[in-house]
Image (cartoon, rainbow, N blue to C red):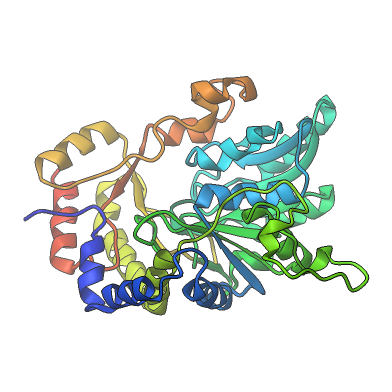
Length: 386
């Protein structure tokens, strides 16, 4: 039996032609970029994510840069983010000349540790070289960060908060989506994400009317938007032909929006299925691994990955490969240890929890269509490792 790490074809078949029909409708409609399906998806996404505004963009990385540009982040500014995440979270910061400050994570949830965040802010203020401006918290592997604690810290120091929910869109904490605490939630629709399209795509969500207009302008070459018009000013041409700010080109394709509309319609059910699978994994694997995943109290994960810890991680990886079970290791080289970020890092030993986890974590197959028989095979393979 061939086991898929993430089985997107099973989802497509389950939807029984709905995605293909949606794509065909978009093709026939001919509005290839920012067509009516984009507007519908943005409205649906905002409603699902409990936000006033959702704006599609080209990918999850652009979603992170849009608010940073809107807030005027620049040289001399500090942006705090975890090192135990994909490179996209931190790479957008140097694009603007600002400095990423890497923060250690909680040993149980793998998300940003609020205690370590405050220590990093205090250290930055004491050094006096950089001005703290923004915190980017990551919903790693699908579960929410400790937003109440992080928001309180941001308020104490006057910082903006981004919820990088590229892996975690749909996660909740005490029934609330991250936007309850964050100024911006960003997400990615990369195909492997729990809510993924059939190419690249991303989105930003916010409750801030002015910020939503600013990012709408920025994603379309700095086009004029309603807030730019003063004293009854009007114009008779396409808004993109009047640039009010230096923008970028980051629009969501209509075909991807059509795919996402259909996927969002079943997303709530899929989150439930993923949680049932994770619970079953936890019960079956707990005796055989160092740690099964821990979700924050009150949190609901969307389980982008199911990640365990093991004392002999590399040995287990080799054993599972022999058994036909695919695995993945996130993240073998944290950002603060990568060559591109050496000038922003305090080097090995500076983030001890992150550096411990990189040697121990291992992700097993996880998707909403993972059946019990396949799951039993995976659990048995892990249990058979000696």
